[in-house]
Image (tube, rainbow, N blue to C red; front, side, top):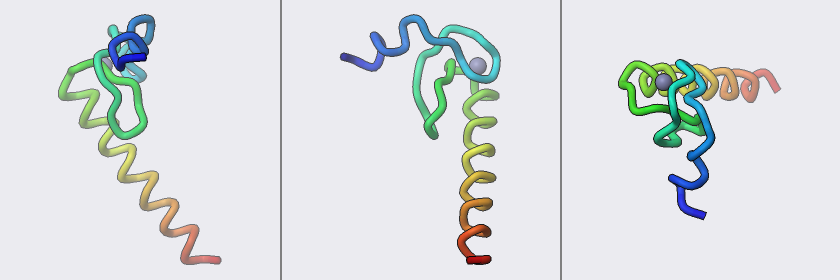
Length: 56
Ligand SMILES: [Zn+2]
C-alpha cells in the first residue's frame, strides 16, 4: 500500500485538513504550522522519555 493510499481517508491530526504526509509519527497536511507542531511535540515527547529514563 502506498503512502497516498494510506492517507486517502485520513485527516491532519492538528487542523483536520486532508492528510498529505506522515512525519514524526503523526498524520499531517502539508501546512508548515502543522509540521512545526508535530516537530515540537515530538521533541517534547523525546525529552519526557529521556527524563523518565534518568529517574530509573
Ligand atoms: Zn494540518
